[in-house]
Structures are given as structure tokens and as C-alpha cells.
Length: 149
Image 1 (cartoon, rainbow, N blue to C red):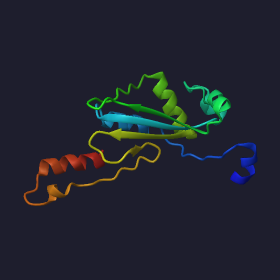
Image 2 (cartoon, helix red, strand yellow; image 1 turned 60 degrees about the horizontal axis):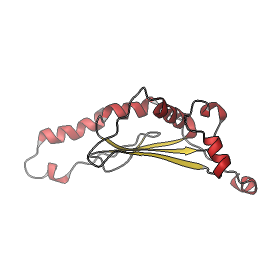
Image 3 (cartoon, rainbow, N blue to C red; image 1 turned 180 degrees about the horizontal axis):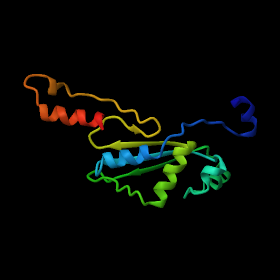
Image 4 (tube, helix red, strand yellow; image 1 turned 90 degrees about the horizontal axis):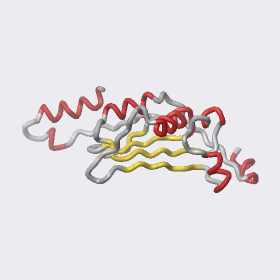
């Protein structure tokens, strides 16, 4: 399919559709720990999912021929992002992404890997020193809470 579209300067992308509550669950799970949010948006996309988007991806596409646009929010080094559930801008990006218009990645303080909203994968690593010598059950319990929520 891609070869047929190239002469017209078009591309075809597929993205997963997911429940936007996955994103908000992660925001609630990591209060005051979100350091970075990255929205990888595909433009333009289906009109039915772009109607409430606070960024005009269609105009951006027409002006620049961009097919993928990244909106990245970064907290100051010693701070965290304030992600509010009533934010029209954030909700428009989350809705667009959840409906198949892109992906959301979240960097959380204390986590090595980026969290990926569309699939919500999370690797669980137990620090080696927690299992050697005398076991610190309280710290070990805290790490297990992350995967049990």
C-alpha cells in the first residue's frame, strides 16, 4: 500500500485504539512524579477524531507536509508536570491519541522505562541489592505494589 501512496506524497499509519482512562489512571498512579509527556501525533487523520483537537494538525500538514508531529511537555529538572483532568488541551491530545491518532509516552521519576499509554506495558525490575543479604521487606513490598495496582 505504501508504494501506491508515495507518488502522491501520502502515507498510511495504523495506531492502536485504547481507553483514554489508561492515561488518566497512570496520571493518578504517579502524582507529582511525571517528568515528561510526549504525544506522537499523526497528521492529518480522520476528521471525526480531529474535531476537538486543540492543535490544527490539518493546517500544520498543509503548511509543512508533516506526517508525524511530536508535542513534548517537560518539567523542570527538580519539579514535575501538573497534569489536570479538566485541561481542555491535554484532554484533546489524549482523546485524539486514544482514538488512534498517535501514541502517548510518559516519563516518571524513579522509572527507567517510558510508560506507553496505548499498550501500558510496564517492566518490573527488582533491584538486586533488595534480594541480597538481609531482605528489606518494606522496600520490596513497595516495588510489588507498582505491579499490583
